[in-house]
Length: 467
Image (cartoon, rainbow, N blue to C red; front, side, top):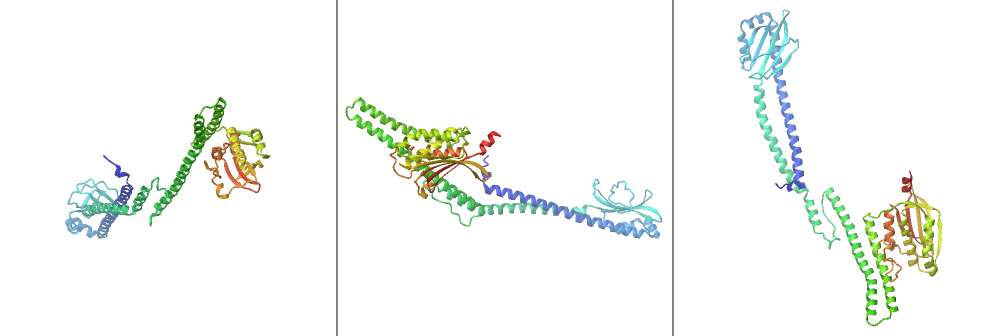
């Protein structure tokens, strides 16, 4: 059996509202039935109480007692209906015994106040009232009763009518709920149609629903925000693919061109060796780009294992200075260090790679005769202690509209891609991924001295480890 229709929101809301309405109607009907039954019961009890009170007043006269005892049918005629009973008992002797239906009476205790009891085990269910009265200082038991037939004759038709009204009401609510849900959820159908029309070639389209309910309107806004993020990510992916193709094409064209030229004629062993050395440089460049892209892919999937530990910043900077010392001399660049914070908590290899990429970026894009300022300090961000590392390229500034894109993959401020020292526009992207893995912060901004790259490492991780 196919229960797919039960997954429909219209069907679920209809069934739920109908069920709740049925429970409410049944509860109201049941309470109404009990209320009417209680009213009839009170009326019957009042009639029995009035009957006993009248007989009590009548029997207070001794002559009346003698007349009623002598002529019991006189009172029977006064009662009239066959469903009534009346007994007057004195010393276990029934002085008056009007019981045409022969109702079996239980043993009743003497009470000075009026008592009521239902006799449901008889063939003719009856409600009785009794009371002990004093006549000439002698106790007499007065018992009056009336069958349920009158009350039942009223309740049964009402019960049938009430059941019919409840069933009809539930059915009417079910039909009205179907119509209301269909009309109320029409905006969801429109939302579905508009969403279905959006594909990979129409990511710029946005949902536009007029006069929609608040919940649907909020949902459409969330979907539009999601489409904006998807469009942005898809655009970045397209640009990323184009940049990959461009970056790979340059060294591959070099390899192909040089190889074709070499194969056009006879070459000496030295010429072949020079060709291989030239090819080796391109191979290294391709390998660096592939390694960088693999690292970024693994970092995006949180598959890079980091081993955080306390790092001596001075030792790392000294090692990197030795690596870049020769290149800095060639470019006539100088380093200025101000390491107030001596230690921080990070993965040593990843930290060294991030700082390496920042210094390489400063040398490559800063040009010759620059001063590179490297500093560390402690800072507070939202009541949390951080260690901040900054790398400033003196005398260099970047346009404000380009700053927000510098950490994007393959983004370059200039179109020239001929410098083999570059990482194909992936160096700063790797820095961003490393900081994300450390739950740190990164940013770039212009200062009076020059463009500043800032990395902030949280100190809280170190505190947790050593506590």
